[in-house]
Image (cartoon, rainbow, N blue to C red; front, side):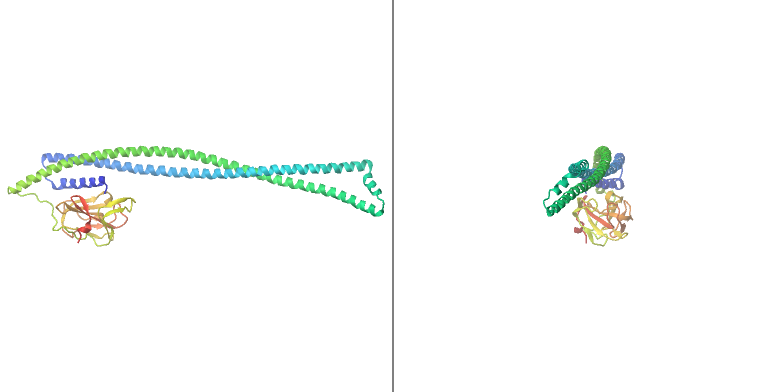
Amino acid sequence: MPWAQWRGFRILVVLVLVFFFAPQSGSASRLTERIREQQQRVERHQRQLEQGRAALRLAKLREGDLSRQLAETNHAIGGVSARLDDLSAQVHVNQRRLAWNQVQLQAAQATLRRHNDAYRKRLVQIYEHGDTGYLSVLLGATSFSEFVERYHDLQLVVRTDQKAIAERKAAEKTVRAVQAQLEGTQLELEGLARQQEQARMQLQGLADERGQLVAVAAEKRQQVAQEVSQLEEISAADEANLEALIVERQQELAAERAAAERARRAGQPAPQGPATASSGYFQWPVSGPITSPFGWRIHPISGLRRFHEGIDIAASMGTTIAAAEAGRVIYAGWYDGYGNYISIDHGGGVSTGYGHCSRIFVAVGQDVARGQAIGAVGSTGNSTGPHLHFEVRINGKPIDPLTRLR
């Protein structure tokens, strides 16, 4: 149990003893009233502290949620930026292909122009002077076989010129088609790039907005944390003042007990105290396996390593809880993480505690016998399921209950 919780428990027990078992003189009544007022102040500040801690938890959750959304937005911006880089690379490659196709197109067009020019000149020459060139070549043959050979050669030249012109035209057509396709791809890539850039700008705007919200949430969390810290300081001071008053009252009680002892020796009746245990051992409050022993453990709810000041005994919901020994009930009600809690004083500084009850059958100040039904097993407070948390304390210090159970 943390120090603050242990101190609260000790104050609680002392208050019960003070208010229910101590005779009240005039000065004692005034001191008791001061203790009551201080206790109310402590409880009021504790409620404010719990509210502040709840607000702090919400502020942390809010900040964490906004930070997660900001991280998701930044991740999306990174993805869009990566796609933009990829599109830019594709545009660059496409532009180089366009440039190369333009060079090929220009070369094909130049070659075509040369062939067309030569072909046109040849047609002009034939039109103006007649086809004397070809005719002179043919007439220059010295034999019929040479004439036939020259005739076939001239046909081959003409067909070659025509084929070259056709091939150049086909090449020009192909280059133009590829260029048109690349230009279409270029326009498509540029359109996608514009869309991606627009999406990136929108995401960046969202990221800026969420970044501002995170900053506001962080400022709010720091403000609430500061308020909680101040409330913790006030609460600690209040508890210290309350403890000082209790110490003062304990001193008065010690003096009253001394006076009572003197009166007893003088033959006057002494006030009756709580029932004392007949032995140093206890019976099992319920039957069942031990699911969590006494000592250090990982808390099943908080996940932190904490000292377990009792044992957990598994039992069905509603199982009757028996008093481990005769004694007087000094607390019966809700107590923090214990849920519904019962504490029995057995005299000699020995007490037992019963936590997470679903029902309580006894009241503060009631004397109980060994084995008497005092409550029912439950799962109230910080509990993961029905069980009984059982404690044995000597002068407020917890010990392993297994050393005293028979």
